[in-house]
Length: 443
Ligand SMILES: Cc1cc2nc3c(=O)[nH]c(=O)nc-3n(C[C@H](O)[C@H](O)[C@H](O)COP(=O)(O)OP(=O)(O)OC[C@H]3O[C@@H](n4cnc5c(N)ncnc54)[C@H](O)[C@@H]3O)c2cc1C
Image (cartoon, rainbow, N blue to C red):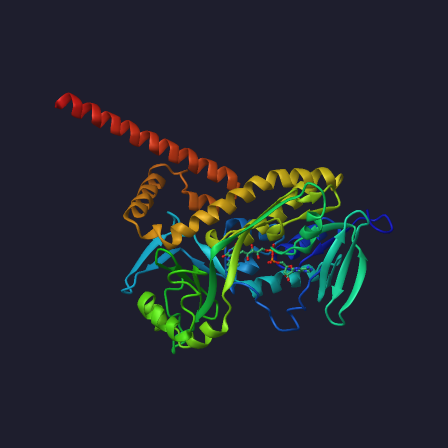
């Protein structure tokens, strides 16, 4: 399994999943080598990479609690209790996420969270982290990988032992798996991309918007959202089409962007003093759903997190799902006594794959809800009915609550929602039939 006979895990990617997995494995007495392409964020420039802040909810928190880090992460998180909708006239409507006041998702800094996890992994005596070390390919048969050291542009073959691919949506470990027989892979880009902008604190040093909410400017075919940061600023993300009406291609200059914002997001634009620089300087990035299977090469390698299931960000669950992977894999390893990795990896993949599919589909569907449906009277009626149901039946949880405030497997939550929809449809049909029968009798 590894040189010298002793078992060793090699994790590629010290992002969110890779670092948490390293901590879990180390606590189970495993030896872990962690290779990260970027330089050490504790000594170099922090590369926030994609989104600056993330919504962390129950699944992620449960996984962090498993290694004693929940409180440390929550200490700098900002709870968001619901959606604050902004219309073009600047009117605000608050829609709570749950039916209890304490139900909230948490805005956390991606860079801060990653750093905390790197520090915690580094503090484990049996974890060694190598920064500036990019995995280029893995030879699963020889338990070896080619690593490119970014300082001197040197390439080296390292002995890997058991490989965990936690190297994100464009995983090099997955690419090596793709070269093997009978490996399914698909990637589907959204026709929409995103650009990040910023709302700084007010001159008095306060939040410029309500801090305990996720702000949404839903505009049908596109939207902007804003999440609070601990420094009292907000990170805004504009999600819009790559091409066509109201798209990145159409609004191809800063002047056009100012006019577009004056029309669509006037209240936000007033709070963005660096709008011109941010708009010109920040990239327009793409979003994709990536699916693959199998996730493992018998007991020699396993993919976790975005490497195995990258989802679009509209349910705020990519990181939460990645953390949940770590917790569940650790539990399955623990239950098996760590023996027979091939069985554990195969069972883990079979257990997680339907859940990854469910959250991928839910995330795609939620984009339509966030940018469009939230405005509709039918959606508001549905939310009101859900509140009544929650008050009447104490165990009732809406789909959003099941996904964000519980550890109910994603696929099970989706199945419950589908059953409810069928039952509601049946009820509507029965009521319709009864009304029809009454009308026929009366007339
Ligand atoms: C705009 C946006 C907003 C989002 N918002 C949310 C949210 O609110 N809530 C939520 O739960 N999720 C959110 N997500 C999803 C979340 O970012 C991902 O699901 C999460 O980062 C996955 O963690 P990971 O560790 O699998 O991958 P990553 O965080 O991408 O980590 C992968 C790591 O591997 C390293 N790496 C890559 N290639 C190599 C290589 N070849 N060799 C060595 N190292 C390598 C990378 O540098 C990185 O450190 C969002 C995503 C986007 C794009």
